[in-house]
Image 1 (cartoon, rainbow, N blue to C red):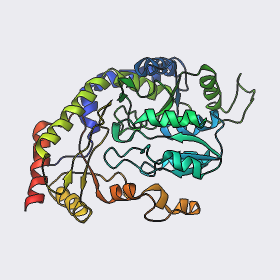
Image 2: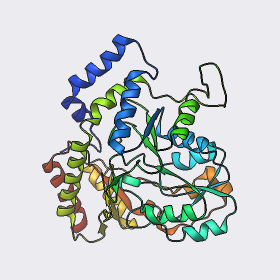
Image 3: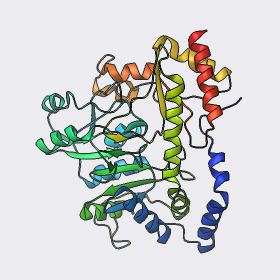
Image 4: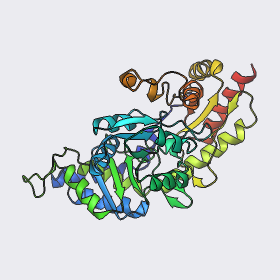
Length: 369
C-alpha cells in the first residue's frame, strides 16, 4: 500500500466542478487583482472567525509582515523557536529582532512559564507572537494577561489553525491574527495566499493601504507599503473550499481519534496531547518517537510505502542566519528535543480508515520487531 503524506488530488476530485467553475468565472471576468471575489472571501472569513475585519494578502508570511508594520513594531518580539521560519523571518524583515520563548513539550506551543522573566531580561520588548502550531491554540489567557501588564502587542501566528478554538472562541476573533492558505493548509488555495483578521477598523484600513504599496487613493502614497494582494482566482477557489472546511475538520479529528485508538500505550511513542480548553483542527498529526528511534522509524515507514514528514528538524534559535542572536544549543531544551523526536503522519481528510490501520500496524511492526 502506498500512502501519501498529503493527497490534494483526492480533495480536488470531490469538488472539481465547483473549483473549475469558480476559476472560469474569474477568467471570464478578466478581473484578477482584488475586486468582488476577494471582498466576498474576506467577508466570509471574518464571519467564520467572528472578527470585524479580514484582509486578504499574498501569503501567510506577508500577513505577519504587514501586521507587524501596521502595528509599528520595532525592538524585540517574543515568539517560539519551534515553528516554520516565516514567523521569525517576518519579525526580522519588519525591522524588529526575534527573541525566543521555549515551548510546552506536550502542545508544542509557547509556554507562558518564564515569559515574565524573559520580558524583564530584555529591554525594548514590543510584541509577542504566539504560534498556534499544528492546528491547536496556544494557552492564551496568561499570555494576554502578561501582554496587558507590560503594554505589549499580540499578533497571533495562526497559519496552521483556521477553525481552531480557545475556550469556545475561534482563533482570529480576539487579537490581530495571521492565516496562510498555502496548499498544504487545512484550507489551501492553488498557490500562495494569506489573511489577517482584526477587530480594529483603523488598523484594518492601514493594512489594506499597506498591501497596495501604501497608496490611498491610487497613485497617492501616504506610507511606504508592499505589493501583497490576494488575487481573485485564489479567493474564488477559497470561497468554494471554505464551505467544506468544517466537514474536513471533522474528518481530520476523526482520523486523529483513530490514530489515538490504534497507537495508545505503545512504548517509546508519545501521542499528540489536546489542550482541554480548545479545539484542535489537526493541520498535522505529530507523534514523538525517542530520538534514537525516530529516523529509523521514518525510514521504515517509507520503505513500506508510508510518507511522513518532520516539522521541524532544526529550531529557529540554531538556524545559521540567526547566529547573530548568540543563542547556543541547550538554550531551549524542549524545542530542541521536539526537533529530534517529532514525526508527522498522514492526516488529510480523505484518508481512509484502512489506510490509518495500515500506518498504525506498520508502526507496531517497527516498535515490536
